[in-house]
Length: 439
Image 1 (cartoon, rainbow, N blue to C red):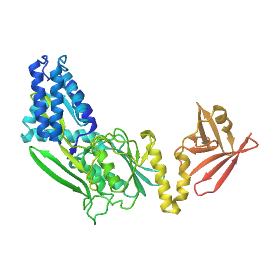
Image 2 (image 1 turned 135 degrees about the horizontal axis):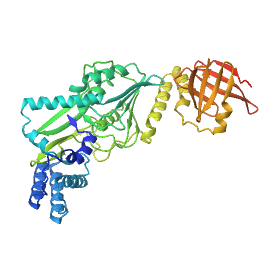
Image 3 (image 1 turned 120 degrees about the horizontal axis):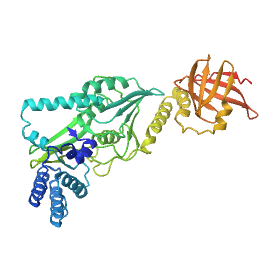
Image 4 (image 1 turned 90 degrees about the vertical axis):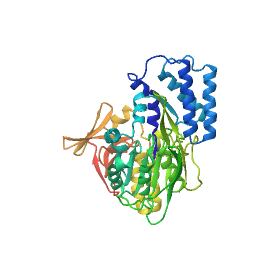
């Protein structure tokens, strides 16, 4: 089931601009505005997840109409924006959106045409492929920690191969970080597939329980951990989820479910608070409304986070969440396995806030050392050896330097009486080697 992404909600507010050429240009009459409001109200009462609340929202829209709040609205695009704002204000539900798209409305009426449905599906596949089905980044962080950057949850029927590749890529990590800080939401079935990798297959585990309206009938479903996967399971490995204020819908459910089940640590900011699945319904011949038509519940308390958002375990500014999660993962791994303490200590300086050294402090590090030299070029330090191999240096502390692209050793500036006397190479295994500073 698709919990429509946040991006789609934002797009709905401006979609009429993209379809201006097909929308009717004649100014709306008072009768037409009233018809739109009445049809919108009827659609809400037939489809909104909370029928009683739908009547209250409809009454609020009629009150705006009766007060003349829409009298100065001259075109369909402006009315769509006004109605969207009023729907959200009356419901506190960010899933609501009204747009203008006569072509979509006409297509909706003709959606039973197999050829048109196939063409629409192929267009969706091409759009998803250009976005790599939401998998924006896959890599391993220092300490063998897998990292997955997900912009949205694609339809798994279209994105299964990409998801399978991602799941296989991370299966050898000692821990995994899912970055959902800027994830719009999407298909809950993709979330189900990815979440299943984090649980064993030999024990039934429900992930989501929900109901929704489908063409006038109520459907109730539960989604469980899948018994067969295209990759190894990460059972028992630490999991961290990064959240932000723009994490929305399915992204929030991914984080919320893992938190409820005690399977992940959440780091970042409170999420947007959009828990309800949505569908798009036509209003007349020009308008459409995106309406929440179901409710999802967690498998523990049977609650949700609608209008409240998901609260992280560690509240951190979203911009700093990845570094915090990386440090926490290293510390947790070291706590569970003392043999990994050395790795955590080694990588800790790389994750700490970087110092800003003065130009004078940087110049003091420059010069020739045995078989190598350090230069200051446009405010940056560079390390050169054999006269032609050069890498940038990054200060990790007053005298500690990381080397571009090198993870197995770093440098320390040695001083005596305040004067630089040597460049010390510190290897990851604890051994060292010094190169005297030459006059």
